[in-house]
Length: 379
Image (cartoon, rainbow, N blue to C red; front, top):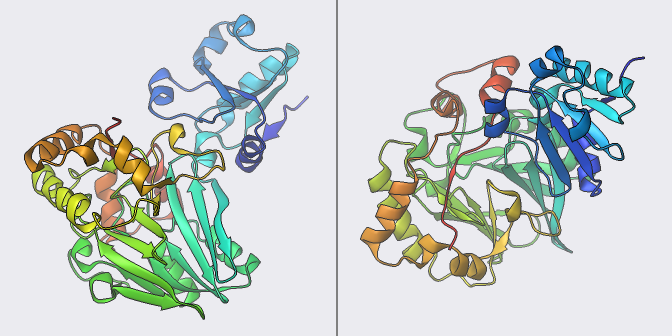
């Protein structure tokens, strides 16, 4: 009997409902340690596939009889084989269709805020910890930091009966391919990014953020104020919406700050990050809701399923943001930044600058793995 295959979207929906799931990951130990499916209701175990080839009973005493077990591998083949073995033993097993490759492309859309004139969604690419946003007002929509799977955004716009008119990238991303230029081409919307991050003239049309500090759309004053917040990259910006929401890109996270070393200038950019944190953002009120472009840890997702925190709470909990002495701050941030870099980040940056283009298959391969764009300093 063919074993039941669970799609990546079905797995996401089960997690959203808070279902208790047991994941049996049959990839090699190193791959599992580097990047795995995580969730607040998920228990996970790694037993490599080849161990089942040697001994089909290898997992029997380590698996629950009373829970749904989802077997996972890189692309879905090995996990199906293991699920069939378990199914034959009476376990409730299903294989994740398409494996981690499929999981890497799943998005979860959550409404952050709604009022008469403004609707704000956070779109979470769960496997990568990448976050993008859609802001709706009076039939118009702005998309911030979109991923390359354009249907996520066009379908949400259609559902809201809105036209996408503005697309904004907070910086040139290093861990995922931006959907910005392609989405602009598809929808006819304006694409905004800072010139300094592009380092040359790209083969796509864009509007420079440094010349467009106030962006308005919708009937009401939905003001998107681009705050230059360099540090993660020299041209990083944050978007301050209605003086209440800060879409902070990779400048400030719920649990850390953007890493300044991906351009090979860790100290120089860490000093820029210091000026951003203590000068640019100093006057922002504590009750501003910070909504970043990434998260690195499940603890950064709140009870509503949103990655976001009040600026005051982040200031209190973030060790780097309490280090007001510039030399000490620079040392802390530049020192911590020498951790593992995002996989393939040089190729991804080249694609996002328009210097290189790739097909769907290669794009998927380049994006496999977690994001590593944050430096964490828990107090």
